[in-house]
Length: 307
Image 1: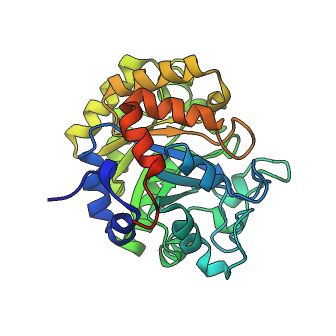
Image 2: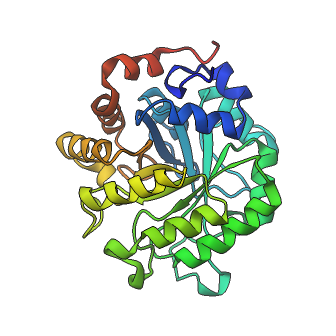
């Protein structure tokens, strides 16, 4: 019988297939927490990676934002060969590792400052996804950072190409946390049932939706309707805080967490911009306790990565 991800050790996660991870998430009944972190910025604790910090606060899944698969950089990581970056991060954290890739045409990328500027290894191409799989990445989320102009149509095209290239090696998640610079896809138009169906048919395993209360016009009832629809198609869902509210007060985090719980989502996501590079550490733990209590939170924190 497949263990719940709640109960999985680092040794379990190390050997799980994409299908086994999905089953383990589903079996956890809405109590899985994914935390984003950025590796190219200075870590909060200088010589400790942000990924290690989010793990220490209770995250089950680490989602790397702005990760360039061709030139991987994670500040605070011991010196390793580039191709071993993900493997080393897995060794240090004992967690499932996902990355964001962005489905946007190079000719359509909007002007960005140096930190957020798109680089070749961040585009959601079949080649980059295959390279990520070879590095040991477990999951790819096709989404967009602020202002990069990622459309749902572009997500569908990237999904098709990546699924064809990588088969079932990777978990593929798709959706947007905010409009991502496409004003015609804002508020309730960020994602619709039609988009969910297209994502599923293009090869997505998990549908990403904005968390209630994070994007103007995105109410709990609307997200619940979309989650129910995604589940009817056999898809898992992840509700995401991608609007810097990961840096809000604890009461706000609890409210968002409980609204997401009421939608029926499978995975709860907290973003990387409390401080630049990760959520406020206390907010990660607050979110975890809100959706599953101290028992499962402290178990995740305390369980040795050597188990």
